[in-house]
Length: 318
Image 1 (tube, rainbow, N blue to C red):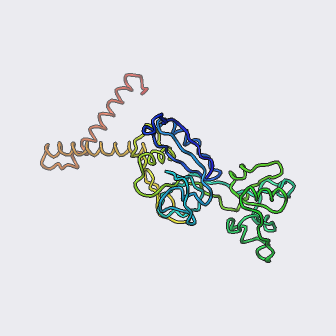
Image 2: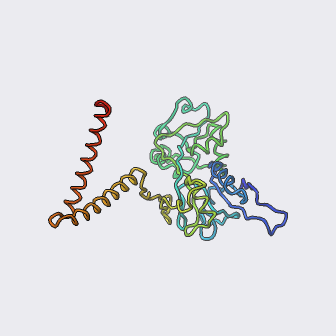
Image 3: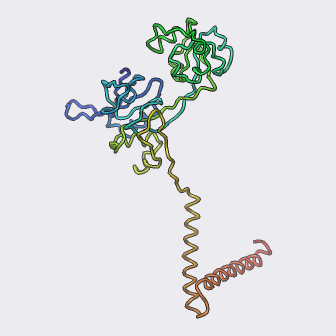
């Protein structure tokens, strides 16, 4: 675990007075600044602990019962920004945004001369990562079809892979944010148009979230500081999915136009009901419906008379 950083106030000379920090983990390449800034503005008394989670620990950092490949994280978090797919069992997840996938090549590679490529353009390349990471390439790769693929040697991280990309050994296909992190003069990257984009999401342990977790979820969803905390539930989150199958179910909300129309219909209904009662008291043969109709005709007649009076007063102009 690297990149641990404390942000904000809440510290005291007396250790018993210290406010526990709100802990945020984020996957490599994810920028969380806009959300941490809002948290600091709204809760300056609660410090933040922000740290980067390694690829195998995106969900392990969330605590008991949640681990990637049976690995237990040394540091725990209240929420985790993750790159899907993940094993989302026992988690709630909100999808946030998608990232374009790019291919990284040496600067003198033929791909450097074009704006974008497809996986078929890369079929003859040597991929310096697990082919299952990029199934679109795996399905067309010449080195897999003819059995000539060489084992990967000396690659323990993306840094190692980029070193070999720069040397012209092969290529890697990664989310654009990771490519930007590894920018160097002898390596360039280009979008791969037919590789599925990756999804960035926010994850937390399913169940009743703590008030702080609920507040942070509201910040991520765009809830304003003055809105009700109940606004947190404008979207239902599907929990307990696996491998990034989680999603959102939109809850239908009534807009201002629909509200105005509903109010007008209710007022008209009340007016008709009152007119019906007056009509039923005026004569035995007149029912509620006929009374309401009579009231409407009288109203229309009054409006026509008023319009005619205006025309006479203003010389034919309304």
